[in-house]
Image: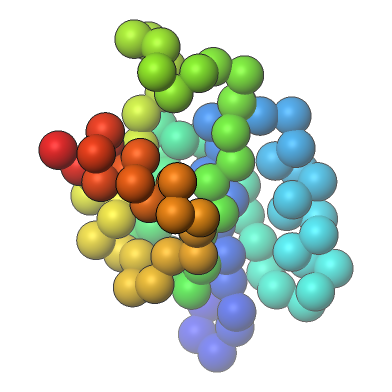
Length: 95
């Protein structure tokens, strides 16, 4: 992946994962989609320049909803997200 822009789309079961990946590719950025439970190993292996999390039908507050592995956030130098998303991550995911 040297000298290429590369993004991983982390899929939490949403219906738009392929659409998002296509839009990224239309901007001449190489993109791969991985399920949330395989994302960490792929991020470690491939070292993408960007990570896009795409949601699913589950509420993040449901007990059995898919969870982001905390270690993923070590790979994010700068994350583009809203204040509410950051607040949720710091209060719910990283506590």
